[in-house]
Length: 282
Length: 289
Ligand SMILES: Nc1ncnc2c1ncn2[C@@H]1O[C@H](COP(=O)(O)OP(=O)(O)OP(=O)(O)O)[C@@H](O)[C@H]1O
Ligand SMILES: [Mg+2]
Image 1 (tube, rainbow over the protein chains, first blue to last red):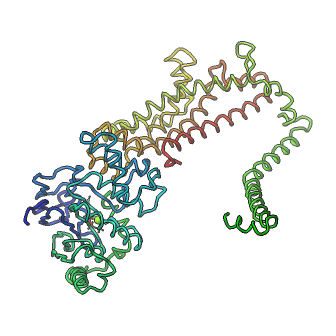
Image 2: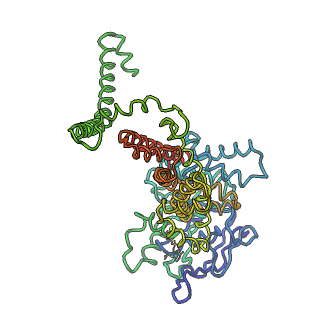
Image 3: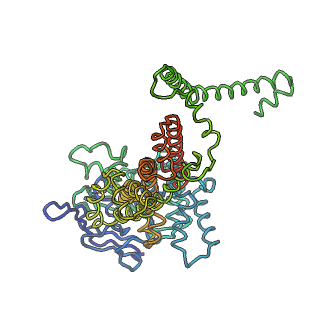
């Protein structure tokens, strides 16, 4: 059981230069097994994206290290593919070209041209986007863009799939639909996934474990909750399942009792996470 | 549609005609609305201006020819744009083409050098710090101020005119390209980093397309400035070209010819701008305005 596919070892992150520094992350430790689906939940600004970016290799940790499958992470790479909240598709490429850009690069020497093409199409089919291959990102809806982003990430066959609030900008119906789709794909591919979310239901429904982070600055992992609900999970059946509601209550209690923000949140985080999240990434 | 078909079976004439008359009327209304909104205003305004011009300039002692007079004077030039009597005495079509050729040389050079310098300045902070002050000063120099120095350097009028076009068009291209390259969203750069694109792939697959909308707005400003500059430069250097044609007409007191030439200059300038705009839209797949 304890094969430590991914381990995050006392990772600190300090932003800024000497007199004006903020220690955003303080000694974050986390181990993840292969095939696990982990959700990271915590108040806005606590450092979830920072942690994900360190694991992706886009940021470097101030101290501590990340090891994936026996190798230390110190640069971004296609073995850790990302899906951002704001999809980050290239607007000048069609849906199909966005995926093939990744496929052609990652499988340059491993697959021939026809295989690469088929692989791109297969991944797009998996997220139900085969009908819009030649559309530009500006011509498809937010939910569809997110699907393409997921297809692109899956098509890289990553060791680790990193999702930063992948459904945050979507309406509730589209979000539920995509969550179901992700669960279906996850059952099929059994990826190792790390997903940031603000949505308690989403976390409980999708995850094997929920990592709850304390408030920043100097945020760290407060509690980890094991979700032992059998799969496949059905959102309607679970709605009045006492175990499900117990997990839900645990997460809510952590967020709203133990880690309650002292000051009122500047504009409720769940309602409007987009500008803040993207501003910090920029 | 299928509904109207099934209905048509019971009473073909009445049923079939009703919808078709309706769609016809709808179509007619749409054409009418387009006509009203897009065609009528400019026609009315231009007509009114021509009328005013006609009235003002047909009084005895008017300094400028009236439109009717002008049409009369220049009829030969209008119907015969490609005559060639040797020397400078060629049709308006040739004059415009000669100017366009100079613009094509100078502008193409400006595009190549401007985009290259723009990418350099956008990518390298050092280059930006070093070159930006220079660019900011040089770009304010009026195009014609370059003419004497380029005449001195090239000792020939044609390369000098081309150089003036080049130096006029290059600044907006450099500046817009560098802004475009510097403003590539973090997200796109992250895509390149996660995929581990190499320098060349990053340049062709991420940087150029991401900066293209900015580059094209620079190219569009550049072509407009080129056309402004060539007409002025040609007045000074002589030879075949629409600019010198205007100057020549002025010396011969052929005011009607000047008016005709101005109309040509305006239409060609508009066409150049529209052309670059169209190419931009095609290349950037609609992300450039
Ligand atoms: N490049 C940076 N320089 C300085 N401070 C930063 C930088 N990036 C993030 N921060 C700070 O680190 C903290 C955590 O940011 P982060 O984006 O990781 O939060 P988050 O938990 O993802 O928030 P959200 O849920 O709103 O997306 C914030 O207080 C932010 O101001
Ligand atoms: Mg975030």
